[in-house]
Length: 165
Image 1 (cartoon, helix red, strand yellow):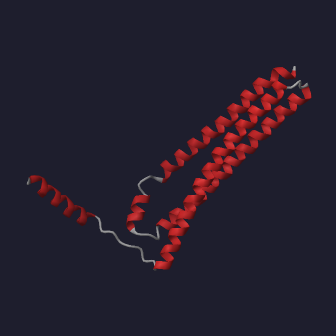
Image 2 (cartoon, helix red, strand yellow):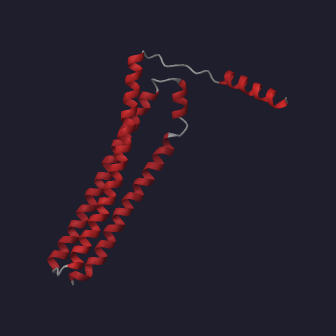
Image 3 (tube, helix red, strand yellow):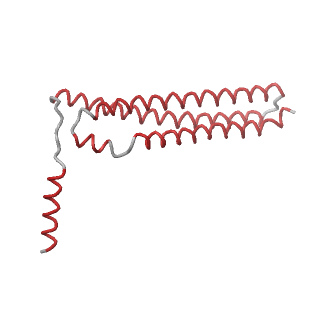
């Protein structure tokens, strides 16, 4: 009996605390905003996938470059060329990671604008994670991706340098 009274009081209190206000958009505009929101989310996921593929592809290229030097009778010029190519792969991969990161930021700004057009509940839920926290998480992950590429490049150069002598 006591439990039922507590539940009723809790439900009544919840209704008094937060009134959901729907958006002022008409149905077709609301559908358009939802479609734009979904598109931006898909673009963020696609960009993140491309970031991971760029990092993985660079590391695979480093492995292939090292194997090409180790498994063939390569001369000093070939090894030096492989080292130069590995630096170019690193630079290109890191540049790609930065472009994809920038793209994600642009899509997040779109989402931020779109959420403001929806109900106050959407705005409340979207605002649960602070912008600063989200940026810190994204840039920590970017830093680890860059460190992974640079570390793999370093090991590739260390493994092929003795062959140049």
